[in-house]
Image (spheres, helix red, strand yellow):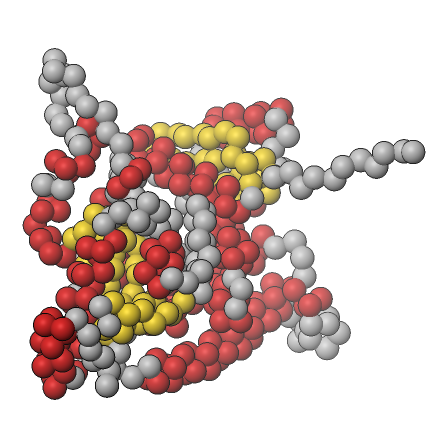
Amino acid sequence: MIQQPTITNLPERAVLVGLITPDQNEAKANEYLDELAFLADTAGADAVARFLQRASGPNSRTYVGSGKLEEIKTFVENNDISMAIFDDDLSSKQVLNIERELKVKILDRTSLILDIFAKRAQTANAKAQVELAQYQYLLPRLTRMWTHLERQRGGIGMRGPGETQIETDRRIILDRISRLKEELRHIDRQKSIQRKNRGKLTRVALVGYTNVGKSTLMNLLSKSDVFAENKLFATLDTTVRKVIIENLPILLTDTVGFIRKLPTHLVDSFKSTLDEVREADILLHVVDISHPNFEEQIEVVNKTLSDIGASDKPMIMVFNKIDAYNHTPKDEDDLTPRSRENIPLSELEETWMSRLGDNAVFVSARKQINIDALKMKIYEKAKEIHLTRFPYNDFLFQKYDEEGEFDPVE
């Protein structure tokens, strides 16, 4: 009997390319490439090598200089590489020039994120949002396209007199963008009605950088089974669950994670999803405290919240993954300044975080550490908001404090 060969879906082999600039030192550039490697892994690619070049900024023709591009080309040809991923957005001219030299598929950070979003999208809402973002990304890059978009709708009768291929493609894309925007406006109206029908229950939204444990925390607090894994952008669709803490019902929402250099049109496309954040009463800002640059991730999230007009809401900082926090104690004869890498968690909590007071809690969602303390902080803030809407329930809260039983909705 002849044994059939086993067919395996091997990941594509990729190289990562970034720059060291006056605004981005080597440590920062390497950290960004670490994240880019994680994005590549999430998309199903294997990042086998990385290339960094010191420059004042991206080369207008090929992103990196000719010498570095030749170095990348040699590696690509000798190591069965099928893709090169660049850490910044590339223009159509740059992509065309780099493709001509390397003769492999060229992606930039945005196109990689869009690919992951397309892979993760499950609902009609998420799929429409991703498709809109893809077309908005594609529109200014039509000059490098190799396929003809009119084949998707039939070429005969679609082209006007003297119209060039790019003009035809641009018209098709603009038409599709218009249709998608109308579809999303319809979905947005439906979601707006759904939010109004939820009544005056206090709304709590989980926000944070991608892969900080929001979905795991959501599952823990709501006893649900929201999809969670150690990948970037595991959650695209907004999930809302009714949660009862100390007999006080709230609506808990899990949202898409934020990331550095998140494309503007992605934020615009996910407007209806981010409306859940805008309309929330309380934000739970989840932070992966075990990440070496969690403070920069906090800044990224805060900037995104500011961009969407949600930075003024009551917020609880949830420092997650305390079980994964590691530090290397300094030797007694080490005279270098103390840093995040060599101080224990207890000492870290006494830094700027101590000024957050009752608005901070340190937990481990995976190990279920300090979850009761988090629930009580949510309860206290939700109770304040609840009483502004139902002031006549104040005596019920007093009764609960005495007897341990009440229903504030009745």
